[in-house]
Image 1 (tube, rainbow, N blue to C red):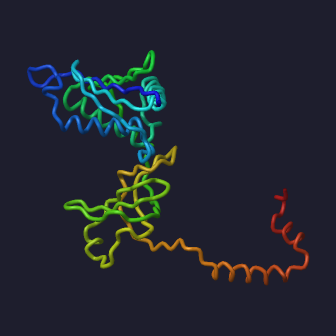
Image 2 (image 1 turned 30 degrees about the vertical axis):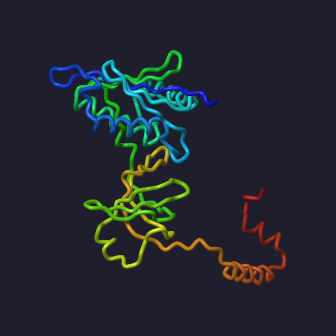
Image 3 (image 1 turned 120 degrees about the vertical axis):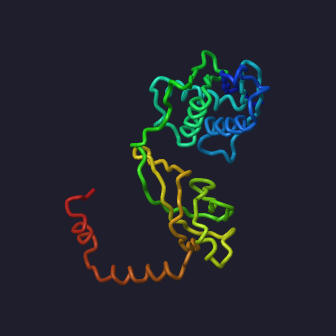
Length: 260
């Protein structure tokens, strides 16, 4: 049976004249923290992640997230690095964004967060109104990207977007002008396309801020193998190659002084 550990997020504070407790802790705050916890534990690939079970307890409010001990141990090490460096710039984007969200809540409600794990001598990350766990804006730059995959959803009531399922990045949501979706006559869903999008990219790691992606254009994408086209290229190359009498010497001249 798989070993299980837990992540604990303890929140201290007050609601008006009353100390914070599960009885006066709003469900919207619970939902926000559930999303943050998943991003902290599994920032990269959530498709096949282990189960995360949840429990809320007294004292003031204690959130317990139980999952594979292997990932709890890894997260404990990450917390130690965050505490030591005082920075979240090195984190994967989902984890950094989750800690920024917790920092926002601490400032907005004057809460104190203590994040720890079930690991012996666990690292403890404290977040309150005195801390400043935000990414350095200077490390993010604007860029353009091409994503290829199957479109699984398109639309939206106020802010339209396209969902594209890619091999490299999983499912991506890209902000898209409503005018484009209105003007496009053909059915987009479950067809393979390329999408050119603008967004932010980490200047040091190359990581893409997937929440910043904005649609630029749709690109036709035909990944099918074209045997006739390939054979034509081979035939043309063969004819040109046959005109060279001393092929070894020709290659040496092309290489110049970079022979191996």
